Image 1 (spheres, one colour):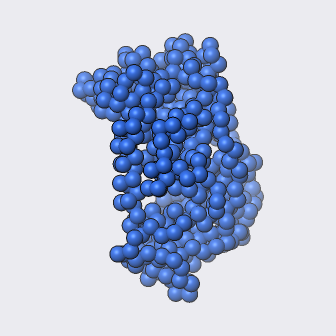
Image 2: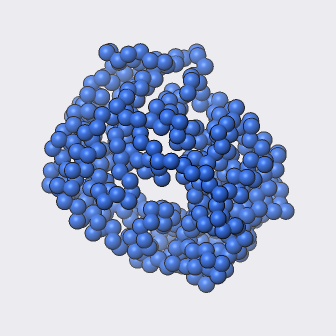
Image 3: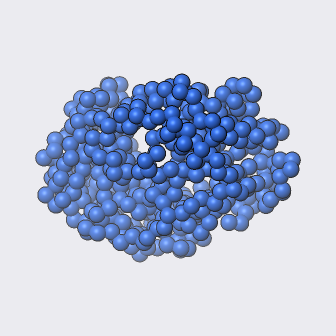
Length: 463
């Protein structure tokens, strides 16, 4: 996940600020342009999906290298996250101040972030300055400096956030939740690390992680905006062409979630947070679309789902309740979340369980399925194709999921062709299992008291 304490994008020069503000008022990339995707391959074999659009003179670039925080060495958790805060803190012959000044002068925005499975980078630039902007991106990607002064400063910002969150119930609970679900798997480790693990990370570790992950064989790129294919080919080789071909990643095993357990994180709070995890479905599974439609009906919609109707509309137990399919490279889950008054937490949990039970046993109605299909088809462009940056991000995810360059045209048929019987089968398959449940707040009656934290303690806990 992104490190919110490290600098991300940089402010652009005054003239560019005015221009970008005006451009924000113009329409996003057209729907036709968004589906006119070109598969561009450079002379050095680097591929990218390109959507040409000259509506506004901006180029948006999104890319990802396989790897992410799951590659952090034991005892040095937070390495990938720290690294993403340093790419714009000096590269090549430019130290931190010089690099950031050049970035401002060019009028570009650059950002990096890590997830469990990848290191993501983004850049948005004015088309007229693309040569200078791509050159800065080349330096950041290929020749990061990892100087000690920026390392200490960014590390200090991350540690400050960790210390601040030690008393935050949700942060403490989430760490316990991941450990309970994933055990000793890398997904259980805190992506931003700990005070102790961050203190162990050196510039040598950062260079080693960069060398292991930043290679053409694990690269996925999407570009949207005012640039043609031939120009993009040259820029791809310029930015990524000098990287090694093969990554050096440690193998990460698949992991099954540890379901059928209840985790109580005790806090003396007026509101109790509830989280339930059920089995998920892989993105490439044959029943993925059936599961996605079932989830939409169960809790995927903020206002029309069964959970919202029963928990919020009929009983007023919570402001919101939702469910979602979570997919990582090595794990999948269906997760339900809500929060309610602590004196009604037991009632809320019982209602959620009852809604899930009825969905598992009976499935949805034909009318619910039709409405869910209409929403999923109609909302895709709004949620995924509403700007050049969001289109670029969507195209990268399509590459990661191996869905093909024509997926946007095929997607509607995948959804429309799902039958009611298939959705009922997906509901039974995913929701019949005993879930993992986390309760964050006062111990509910009948729940064994577990290790927790109260105001005035360290808030950090164990594990």
